[in-house]
Image (cartoon, rainbow, N blue to C red):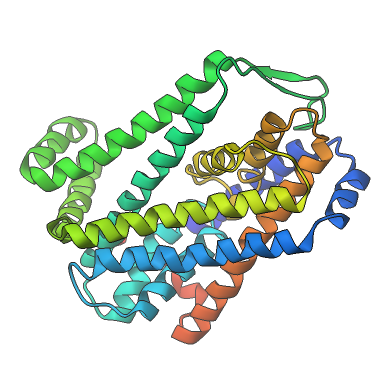
Length: 352
């Protein structure tokens, strides 16, 4: 029942965001922009997207093999099924599905698979920090942003001062760095971190503190990749390659719509998308995905028709979902896993 309520709330929020974004939209202009799309660049964008899926699994393989052997097929299926769940259900349910599926396919303890999935997310965070910093440093100084009327269903223009942009980006990067520092410190001195969790969060909620301690113990148990500088370097390299594929896909999509853009535009778009969808709210990131795409285009291409920016957002989101759906359904069928089984996977599985 709880999952049904979450899905209902997520769908309602997604519908509200879409309504707010696309009210007062000139749909004739949107469809005109879609009809003029350059198919060769659209295919290039898709090639980058598909490539990132394989690069992401290869990155995870270096983390996993430091603790236990696992077939590439199992890693690929677990990853793609998790993506399908993430883009179908709210609350990032796929983050719990990925270790569950790997544990089921590879016949490994669930706690060990949770640790390896968590390590992969840390590796991903390092590359995200690089993207955020590059996007922040590339923005012209003193850049004031103005979104024209109709950009987000607004009747009047919306202005955003440059004084608020860099501190926000710096804060996001600092928060990610702090998170990574805590997790790395966990590897160095696990006992101290667990005592700190009990002494602080334990005063607020003993149950939550105990759950977090179990997560940290599982995480620390799987951090064997740090013992292999070679595997760690390869995992980091494939993480950067994965994000680089995202940058290439964004650049190709803007080229498909014949939108002139500065060199930093794809970096900025990818960074904004990552920030906006980091907090799980709507299924498939509906609305959450469209806002950063539209905002980025109106920032890097002043004077761009908001309807054209919305056309890019719609097509980009659709072509991000397409391979997720195709590969996710294929892996479900190949591994003989029912989607309904995944609906019962809960975060409490971390205690296994």
